[in-house]
Length: 356
Image 1 (cartoon, one colour):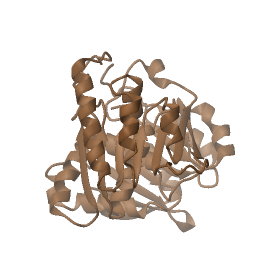
Image 2 (image 1 turned 180 degrees about the horizontal axis):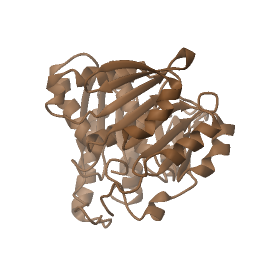
Image 3 (image 1 turned 135 degrees about the vertical axis):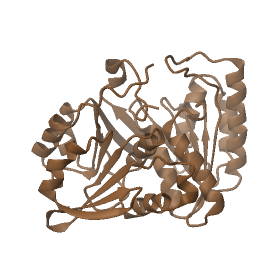
């Protein structure tokens, strides 16, 4: 496992059920910002005003920026008459530029991460997508999120990572079906989606809680953002209420990643499960990040997890590949993210601000 920003790869996602703006896009942004990367978020459908206003409000608040001085982000919004609105964060300066000028200047700004949200051929032509891939800086990570399947199938061969989201409701009509969104599958973006869901709920004035399983604190970029947001939330009532806690021992020493588990890891996972159980009693949106993984790695037993999930009365989101069948059976919605390429093996390492 290496800490490198020497290679920028190209990602594409198909999400046919977007809610104005992409949850996965938010996850990417928070992780990149947490490690100080320069981000461009391009809203091709002019639908992300709530999220944009949220970032603007944080950047204008000293009580947030004193704990998180890393908001290096430009927000571009496609408007009518081939005009693109640009918002510079943290300055919160606004400008309009012609669409042609936007495309001509984009590569010269040297962004670490560029995300095109609400994108399809109606908004960005196939030629323009391919040209953007070919003309970007070699260090820039590029993410396209599409909602049109035929466009996705046609363009995905040009990308290093392609993932498709499929949603399956539990229609068994059983009385014990809980309000659980289970995000699983082999593709990337499972945790990103949950972070986007979390921030979306928070913006909509809901109290939210995130419990990490087997993820050491202060390693992942979004944790740095969440830590500052947690402190800011104590002093502000503009949105909902925010809290997060990380369980898991240190695994990354700056060069290698330890995958073996110990008794101490099991102890950490059980503490996380106890915190999850307590959070669920409050009947507010809760994220159990990598809960599926904790079961598969035998840090937790399926039976003890099921016992806790019986207390779900509101919204719970769980993530992790290979969700056990019994967990799927009590999930009201299963979101599977299927990936067709494994760029991590090809790249032989994880990139700071992108993969952790």
